[in-house]
Every structure is written in C-alpha cells, then in structure tokens.
Image (cartoon, rainbow, N blue to C red; front, side, top):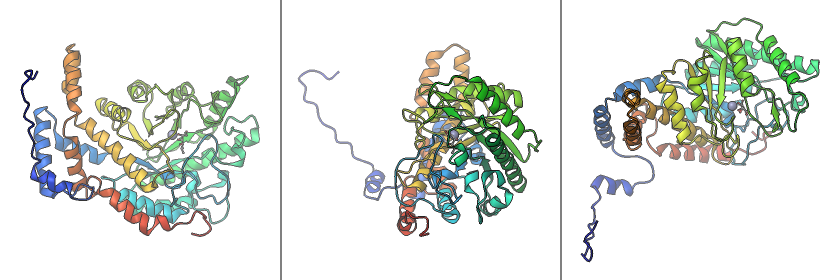
Length: 456
Ligand code: RNT
Ligand code: ZN
C-alpha cells in the first residue's frame, strides 16, 4: 500500500536497447541470431532448474510427423472434375481468392506451407484428390490415380495418409452411403472403401511406413429417426465387408471416425462415438477422435487415456469448433494444449497419430496451414517442456496446491525462446517472418488465380 498523501514519483523504465531497435523493425522476429541464441540459453537454464531437458524435448519434437490435411488448400473440392458441390454436412465458408484449382497448384501451395513449418510432416489425402485423366467413379479408383502423389511425396521425402470420400457424390445425396437401405448403393460405397485400402497399402509400401486410412461416414438423419438400430447394423456390416481383406499393418491401418451431429444429420448420426468405440475395440481398429465431433463442452483431451486402454492406436483430427463443428483453424488454446499434454503425459507418441482437420476459406489458405500446424507443434513443444514427473509426484503425494501452483507457473515459462530457436535451427522462418513469405507467394502466385477452374 502506498502511504496516503505522498507524492508518487513516476519511474520511467528505459527499454533495453535491443527491444527499442526491434520495435522499429517490420513485424517478424528478425532479432540477430545471437540474441535468439542468448534467449534460448536463458530458457534452457530456466527449464533446467525445473528438471526439464530442453534438448531432449526438441529431439522428440523433431521426430513427430503431423499429418497435414490436403483439403485446407482447396476448400475440400478435390479434382474429380465434376461440379458436385460440397455436401454431407461439410461446409466451408469464405471466398478468399487463390484456391488451388488443380493438383499442381495444390502441390505448389503445400510446398510453400511445408517450408514454413519446422520438421518433416505427412500429407493426408482424400480419395477426391486423385489425378483422373478420364472420369472414373469412386468405386473404380486405383493406385494409378495416386501414383503422381506417391512420386511427389517421395521427392519431398514425406509420407502419405489417406481417406475414402463418402460425401459430395450423387450416391450420397440423400445423406446415406454405407448404411444406405438400398443394397446397390451400399455395395457401391463398399467397393469405394475397398479400393481406398488397396491404394493406402500401396502408399504405405512405397513409403515404408503405414498409411493411415481414415473412414468417416456422414450417414444420418436431419430429423428424429424411427429406427436407429438398422442403419447401425448396416454400417457395421458394410465396414466388415470392406475390412474383410487382410492388409499388412506395416502398409496401412484402418481408422474410424465418429461424429455427434452434422448439418443435415442433427438428430442422428449412424457412426456415433459409442458405435465406433465399440467397433474399433471389437475389430482392433484405430479410433479417430475429431476435436469438433462431440458436445461443445466435451473435450477429446480427456478421451485419449480412456480410449487407449482399449484400442491399439488413435488418430487425432485436431480441429477447432466454434459453437459447432465449424473446423476453424487451430489456435494455441487451452484444448490444443491439453490434447498435447495428454499425449505426452501418457507417453503415447508412438500410439497417437496427430492429424489436422480444419478448413477456412475466409483467410489465406497457405497461412491457415502455417498457423494451424505451427500451433500444433508449439503446443506439443509446450507439453514436452512440462515438468511432468514433478507434477505427477506432487499429485501422488496429495499436494494438489503444489500441483496447481507448478502448472500455473508453466504458463509464463519462456516457451517462445525455445520455439524460435527450434524454427531457426530447422531452417524455417522465425516468429512472424513466415507471414511475409506467404504474402510474397500470394502476390506472385495465388492472387493471380482466377475463380474459374477452366482458366488455370
Ligand atoms: C467431417 C470429418 C472428416 C472431414 C474430412 C474432410 O466432419 O471431420 O474428417 O472433415 O474427412
Ligand atoms: Zn475429422
């Protein structure tokens, strides 16, 4: 408390020289590398005092490959060449110019995005994204339509993941695919699912590690169903028919993704959480948890340790729902941090595949990839820099006060200094420098694209 009536002298704090000069520079962290290193060394000391080995954390971070989703680049349009609009509950809003209109534009955009993200990461392709010189329906796709991607991935030294596409198609227009009551329609989609497994296995063999093939099936009803049971029986039956063929787990792994509701399936989704949890456990499948696919106050961070007791592996669709499953770009929010903390605290990095699933067409799409992926990695780094052993020890000893105090203290640890150093040593832009690169690319490439795919 200041003594009453006393004149308080206003002390002007002089800003250190480094900060003053940094303020006159354009946005972006262009601190001389020596300062970056000094900041890093100070951070290392601070983490060291907590018993955290920063170098070990960075090494672990460098080994994690995020599965970057191709569909942020073109608003989930794909390259089938027809004019089927996005459907089955998927919605992309915004009309930011520069959407990738063909395979080569998407690859070029991805290459720019990858150059802004530290580490080596995977590419998650949907079946819609093949190269189809002649029209081919979904039940007829083959590895030949993805050979270009396989070759490109090898050149880029990245691995691929895959997804059957059970949406945006005339045979999905009434909201049902694998659970359809019409046998012929069901059969069509079963053939599609089977084809994607062969393609995924070929990708896995080519890259020497399993290609995760994720099944998300939108089937459901807008209004209250009279029978919830039969479609679920049909979905399980169709999936069983797709999965009947043995594939080498070294080449591909099947994942299944649940959903609570979608636009047009508000009242009932056949593939609910309980359905797929049961399915994955009973069929030994990878379970996919999408951060936007549960009740708004329900979080997937809490489901990681619970489900991993009973399923072999998880695929995460890291996403950000705003009021609904809106697939906003992933920000560095509490749930993102909690997800990564759970993955690290449980020692699950070898059983959890981290994939992204957001699509925003209201901002620059390459920037969306950079923001979402960098945030995901930053949150993972934060989790790796946590003094987990100490926290768990306090908890075990019943010192919940100490646990909360130490957790809160983490929030102002110098994560940014470690992250900047990691970016610099990974040869990717430090701080906001990446935005300048996106702006340059936008000026010279994406802004010149027309909205009309015919004028490529
Ligand atoms: C839809 C699911 C699904 C899709 C992608 C395109 O709600 O999240 O994963 O977003 O497969
Ligand atoms: Zn998803």
